[in-house]
Image 1 (cartoon, rainbow, N blue to C red):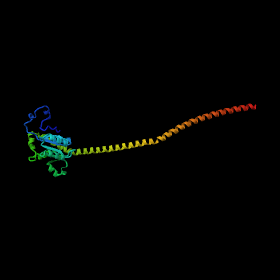
Image 2 (cartoon, rainbow, N blue to C red):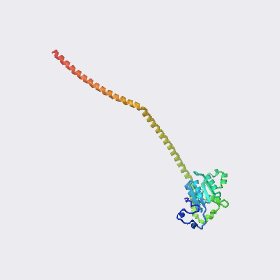
Image 3 (cartoon, one colour):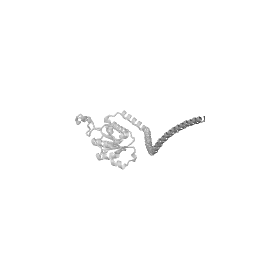
Image 4 (cartoon, one colour):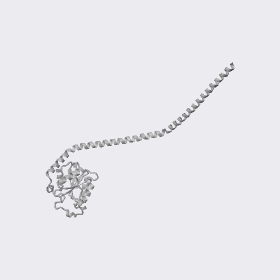
Length: 283
């Protein structure tokens, strides 16, 4: 992974915190060239930093152009490697800002669209283009091209010399090359996986849109139901009134029926009494 950048004079923050004299900690070994790597993708940024370390460079990383320029202001660098397409500041804007701050500093711009770039603008900014995807040899050639004598960068040694002084194991370079080749072969599978993820994201967005539409329709139906209930409240009240009046009528009819039955009973009694009187008179 890309390490945190030390201060402008190369002192480690831990040494400064202990109060040690930075001059007493200076090694007599030649200073290794320092590279600033700017890329918003952490895996690519860390990989480039590791490759540069295998090439005997010190490497610091930044996820955005603004953070990279802040490191450039605070430290001393021999080379800047920046991605082209990044959120916020693009690689063009980073290169222009680097030219204003350090006109002689080498800048490598990595991009998958080398053929679509404006050659005149590339020449004006003095950029070295690094096509994506790239391997260790591609990065090494780009660095050598940028740091070669007369390229406008002092304090940088040739790559082969720097690598020799650091005694990088050949086996480690071979293993890294095999790893990079395996990663390059895995790119199609990764693209298929990314395509599947993009489809899933689109389907999720479609489902979300359908859910929002269903929620809207449900709200409309609920409002319509509330409106109907409000409109039918007088009818419901009238029906309740009619039901109450009907119950009163039924009660009155019941009382009338009871009175009628009482009258019929009394009539029957009166008829029987009259018949008894008639029988007595006939005797």
